[in-house]
Image (cartoon, rainbow, N blue to C red; front, side, top):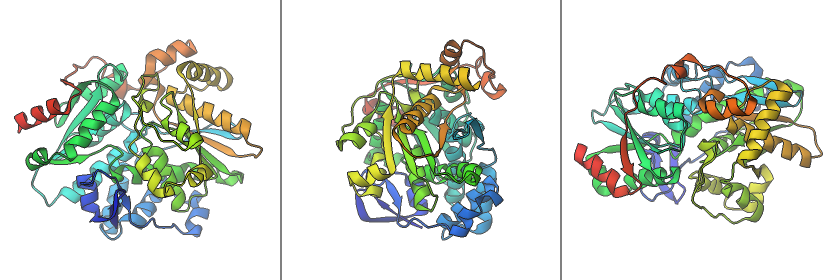
Length: 434
């Protein structure tokens, strides 16, 4: 498969270049030259397939020109080996639990798949590959777990100081080995800006082979499309339209859902659910895209003021507002709203949800109130609630269980390199190490 830059459709590269270089030199994002349409027979018989088999079929449709069937099978079996079940709140409202992977966050699907794919694509090159990652919370932990001790690959994770939860920070800073954490005195947008500048820096790229595991890398979006099909499979027998409510920050997750629809998944609507960092809901309402500095909230993975994947969304919808609005609707909520929803879900359904999932729940309620039609709503629960232990337990007034793979990190020593939000400080550190 070939890929083009959103800034220049004549800039065409192969899979290896798109994945290992991550960002085009013109600062666009890579998109597949064609989006394969899965057969209607496959879609109608999704319930006959396992999650891994669904992942294989989608991967084969995208990667068959670049990898053998046995390589694709190994890729899927080594990465899509934990479930994405639905929890039922009521007859028409479901929660898609995306936290059953190693780091307890939805980013595990993309990070593990990407690590496996990069290993295959990099195997004939003896040069070290350096992965740069900006995280607002969950990406860093998933990438750290997915790439830990991967031969030939070092990982540098940049996170905003004081703006990730205690246990999220432990996931970034305690593994050691080939994982190095940078604690940035700034916001997620500052971290993301440093990463993007690094890819465009000629001097740095002479000294390092750089790649990214953020959702700017197309290899993250491919596996994130899988669980949309897996979720639909679990409710398709109910014969109602399906709406996905997606808590969103950098909008890679939602963009993957849009691609899933292009591949043939019959989705009625996507809800872009955000906190007060509401750049996309504002755009969907007014047609004006106005990036702004992000603000800290209890749903920190969505604290993004300039979402990278808007460039891909513009490309898909050809910058036409009506095309956006036909498939997407946006809602935003503040921290008080979020806490009230967490409490409501716990009291009404006995279900413990994290702040991001709670925002998705509120968006579902808002859309249901505005719609005259019956539909199935699937809310993305993007992280295990124990990753936000203090706020969750305070809101619901009860203790919650912490999975052992997370609780075991609390006593481990944090190791990070503290840097300013200035790109030159990061560059100087990198060149000094080299």
